[in-house]
Length: 500
Image (tube, rainbow, N blue to C red):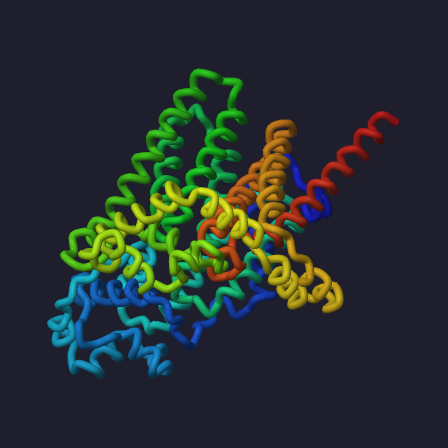
């Protein structure tokens, strides 16, 4: 293909690894040019308990070899009250307070379990490489790791045959959403978007390049993907169904692409699935076991019943008023003690009590519960189009068009229907025309569908903090649709020219 064709059109033949890397690099550079602050250290700590606990554990593990934390020194609070210390080496901040690292390490006597351990391990790995980092340097490294995940997606899309225009548009959209997440640079939530993009890229790459006639390579690739999936689940537990659905779609796509050779295909699929499961189990065990061994308060996975119960009050409704529910962590403890007065906050017994309470509502008030979820689904994702319009305005779109788009309010029912429809369209493109870009579209759609359904279950109003995957989908899907239309028109023109 000519450079002009590479710029504007996709190809089912794919591109060489070198050309894909070059186009992916150009695409990422364009995205970073339009969002140049992504690698800038954010000068404030977000008020997020999970992030702060992950940071404490990482610092304790790297400098003192323990996961215990101090009961008389709150390092995140110190950094919040004195933001200038974010730019000092972490070691120096601690030694100024304690006089020496040894004295600080001796104060680490409080075991406290933190759930979703991947953020802690990521921080721990970065600090293990460079213990002299400042907290701001740690934030920049976290941001760089997320940009690297986007780079994998851009290269994989180009390798699969996506045009340079499409990969650049994906990079620009993703960088725009990452820019909106900049205040949460030290948190796990920006990884929700980056990990979804990474898995789309890796599965696209796998289907493009992996041969079923090389079972060892299949096992290694699927095993690594299992480990990455476990890492993603331990970054955000509620996204486990999304990651597993992506895996199922990728296995189906891999099988279809190589269906001509039945025996090696069946062997490769079996080996791949088994390796994936081993990778998930092994990585999950390694990620959570050190935390689970702590004799402290808490559980190693994110609570499930806790948000399910509290979210029944969002938005406020007749059932939540009758049951005296509201979105407040302390309300969860009050409700749990209606079932079991002896429970302690965030203990396994606490989760069991809330689960029993939640199920009892379905048994005793099924119509009221259905009404609650019907209301939640109707407003789920509300505001995502407006947020997309604001991003497009920042990229140069006229404010008049932006205001019109921002006024569009799409019900959650239609967003679910749209994500399912685009997922089906992508799958048809892949199955009928062997267009791997169609598989990527399906995977993007799975991420968005899972996000909007999670939104309907828990937090219906759109917050980029929680729903960044949905925002990226809203920005990327029109570009993919335009690309598909351009490729179709080009193929039709070529057929007409040949017939003439």
